[in-house]
Image (cartoon, rainbow, N blue to C red; front, top):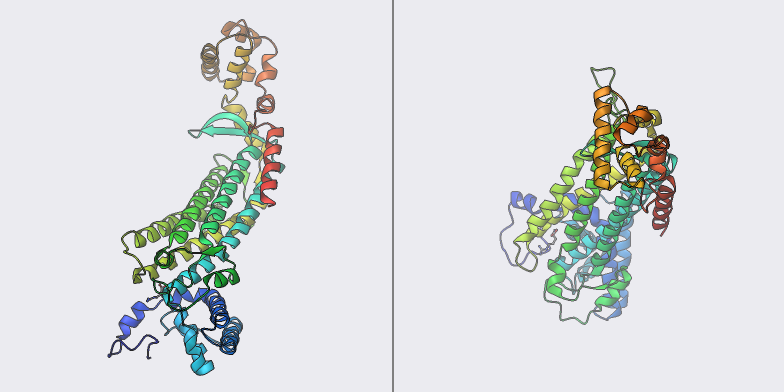
Length: 458
Ligand code: ARG
C-alpha cells in the first residue's frame, strides 16, 4: 500500500518492517478522540481561513460519518493501516476526494498523537474517578453496618488493641479519597492541549491553538511546542497514581484473604465472588481478592515500562514513544476491572461478629487499658506498663484472661487496683473510650463516615 508519507523514499517498506512499525492494533481504541480532535482542527482551519468554511464543513461531515460507521460497525478497522491517525485520514480521503487531503494542514502526527492520548486518558480518569467513588461509597456503607463490631486491631500481625471493623474499613476509605485526589491532580496537569505544536517547532500558518483547546474541553495549551510533543508526564503520572491505588486495593485484598481464612474466620465472602477447589470439597477460595493482589504487580510493571521508555529520549518525538500506550492502557483496564470487582464483592461480605469478638478477648489486647487505668490511679505510665505486663505474664502462665483475674490477685499486682478495673478493661469500654479524633469509638467512626461521604459527594 502506498504510504501517506511516501515521497522521500523510493522502495516499498518490507512487510516485516510494516508489521513491526504498526500500532493500529492498540491505538485504534483512540479512534473517537482522534476523530473529535480532527473535527476541532478542521473547524479551526476554516475559521482562520486556512481552508474555506465549506471545506471545513465537508471535513467535519466526513469525519462524523467515519465516527458513526465505526461505532455502528459498518466501517471495520483496517489493521494494515499504520496507525489510527493514518487510517482515519485514508478513509476520509477515499470518501471525500481531494478535500480530505487538506485536514492534515498545520499539524503533524506528533501533536495529533499527543492530543489523542491526552483526551483518551482524560476520559479514563473520569471513569476511574467514578469507579473509585463507587468503591469508597460501598466501604462507607459496610463501615456503618459494622461500626460497633469489635475486632482485634493488629501491629506486626499480633493482636494489639481492640478496634471496630468499621474503623478498620474506614482506613481504606481514607486511602481511596487520597487516590481520588491523585487522579484529579493528574487530570489538571494533563488537561492542556498540545495540538498546534505540529512536528515540534510550531507552524507558519496563522492557527488558533486556544480555539481548538477550548473546543476540546482543555483548560489551556502547552506553552512550548517542543515540550508539547515530547511530554508524556501525564501518562507516567496516571500510572503512578494507579500503582498507588492498586497498592491500596492489594492491602485490602490481603486482609480479606486473611480474614476469610479458617484461621481467622472474621468474614465470609459472598459465594458469587469465591470459587471452589477442583479436588478439595471444603474449600472456598478468595480468588477475586488474590487476583486483585496479583494484578497489582502488572500495574507496577506498567509504571516502570513508561518511565523506562521515556528516560533516555532526546527531545522531541521519537518512535520509541509509540511504546507509551499499551502499558498505560493496561494499567487503566486493570485498575478499572479491580475497582469494579471489589465494589461488586464487598456489599455481600459478612462479618462474623462473634468470631471477631472472641479473637479480641483472647489476646490481652486490653493490656494498654489496664496500664492506662493505673495511670489514672497516679502511677507513671512506664511503671504502669510494667505492672500490666506482669499481669499478662501471670495470665499466660495460668491460662487466664485479664477479665478473669480476681480482685485479690489484682491487689497483689498493685494495691491501687479497685473493683472498677473490670469496667475499665471491658472491650466495649476500651473501644468507647477512644474518643480522640480519628479514634475507634463508634462516634468517631461515624464522624469519619460522614466526612468521607461529604468528600465523595463533590
Ligand atoms: N503511531 C505513532 C505513535 O503512536 C504516531 C506518531 C507518529 N509520528 C511520527 N512522526 N512517526 O507514536
